[in-house]
Image (cartoon, rainbow, N blue to C red):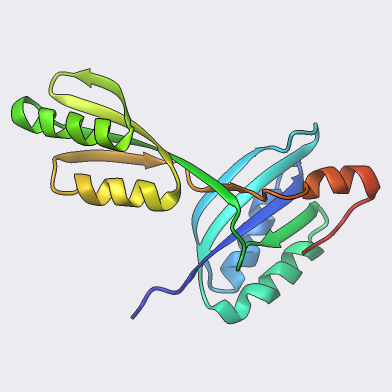
Length: 177
C-alpha cells in the first residue's frame, strides 16, 4: 500500500492545558497519523504556534480544517496545500565513526554544511539544519554509515506574506483559511 500524501498545517492556539490533546483527537478520528509536531510560544503571551505534518486521505483535509477551526482554543488554522511557506527543521545525528569512516563522515558534513557538535570516543554527533527534504537527503547519504541515533525537530513553517497572527491581534480573531 502506497503512503498517503503529506499535509502541513499551521495553527495559532490559546496556550492552555489540553489544547494539544483535542487537536490530536481531530487527526485521529479522521485516520490521520501525525508525522511531526512542533509547538512553541506564539510570539504573544498566552498564545502558541503549532506546525503539524501528517499523512492521510486528501479527501479529509477540508473536514480536518473545519473541525480544527471549531475548537474553542484554536484561533487560526491553515493548510499549506499549493503554498510555498518558508520551512526549517533541525536534526541531531549520532554515528559510530573512527578512522577512515570518520574522515568520510566529516567530508560529508563539510560538503553539506553540517556542524559537528560532538566528536568523542569513536562517535560523532552532527547538527543539521535545513528543509525536511535536505535533512532526508543527508540521512540517505549517511544511511550506509554506522548510524546510531537520529533526533529530528519536525518541520516548522512560516508564510512569507502578511502575518496571520498579527492580523488576528490587530483586527479581531480569524478562525480559518
